Length: 233
Length: 399
Image (cartoon, rainbow over all chains, first blue to last red; front, side):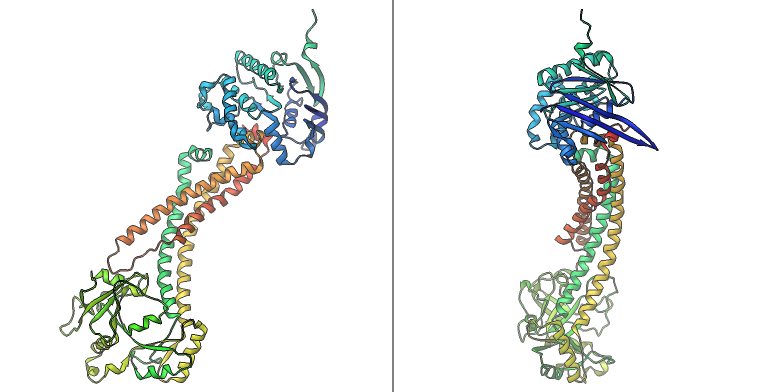
């Protein structure tokens, strides 16, 4: 089955003698092409869930399947390969490498996949699609926050992943730029059929997703399609 | 490309780090070239003295004089294939003492046929060997020919008259018939004459009181004894023992003692010079460690990002290792370049006749640059390992 399945996914931390239940037995199915907003208060487990989905963390218990692959069976090298091929990341602080120009930043993930060298043309196309074809050789310091985040979005897509994980992608830009970024994401989601999982505090942004998952104390409080939230006239 | 940019990102810091390596490699190159030069000189001694048995007067005899008749007695000893009389004189008597890594200019007299037996073969850059039975002919080593600006066909007075020579100083005119190729060892400073001319110089060197009472045609200063080619050093030692037991009034030196003295001298010099240079280089290597740890600390988020987009532990580690290796390589190339330039300039300004101080060899070149590169790589291991083991979740959110 294509898509992502979380089965009782759990992540506990020890802090001193206390056990922190960052994510506590979450079970979900994520269909290909969904645009999911994960909301909740600070400490509700949103970022932990994103890190688990991105294979940056290993769960304490439970299972995570990506495109039918049980990720618990993967070694570190295979997890890195799956991250490179199946997952894209977008962070609040863009995390562009200051020593690289726009094109080189977008091409960065190509280094870590086989046959990634021929992805340059794809990288250029993506930069064009995010509206920055005139900024190919610019360094991150020469870009606005919105432009930098668009570069990060292009970077997240360069290996044609099946899922993109976005951690507060609009948190560092103004409202207008934030909406432009969300419009871009919606367009890419629609055109590329790529799954988006977006963590946000912004209810307006979350309201534009097709599905909204609310977490509280590491558990799923609500899991609703956004259309269902809209009152029928 | 990104690795070069990373090194260039902090220009001053990279410059200072690379400078540490440069100084170390510079020291290694110059000290190593000095050791190589010294060893080439000693290796010539090993090659020469490892192939024959030197026979001289017995211990306690003040003058190096032996009856030529001893050669026949020596030839009768089991294992001896050939024996040649040998004479040696200062080419520049009365010259002020000076420190040099080479041997002093000398006049060596003997049978030209001895070259066929010698372990250290000499070849001719121009001219030819002294003619058998001739007199007044000389073959000059490469250094001594340059010192006096002589070429084949020129004449040279030997020994060289000192500036403050006494009125009764005697020397003789010789015609240069051959110039030897460079050997980087003793023959470069030798002037070779035949036995009869050697005996003439021997007579000149004797005290006036006994000069006319000695028939120099029946005397030699020492005897070079050869076994058949391919004889081992141990067997030559046995021959020396047999000469000492069977021939009275002579002292045969075991060649292994001479060879070991040369080798131990070379080993000590090489150890001292190389250790000093390596110490400097290792200090330079520590600066690479420090620089790379700083680079890791500054690029924690970058490391986290690379892991997030698919970099493995190996990928991250190799990127930092390559960066450290590049620092070592650049430092090695620059340090070697400067060191090589210094050795070439110093050798080039050495006055003719004085031994040059440095010898750059391919082995030294490979060792100096290779060691610096390897040092950079080794210095980068710990920082690279730390970078590779960073938890991407923590690294990505590092402030």
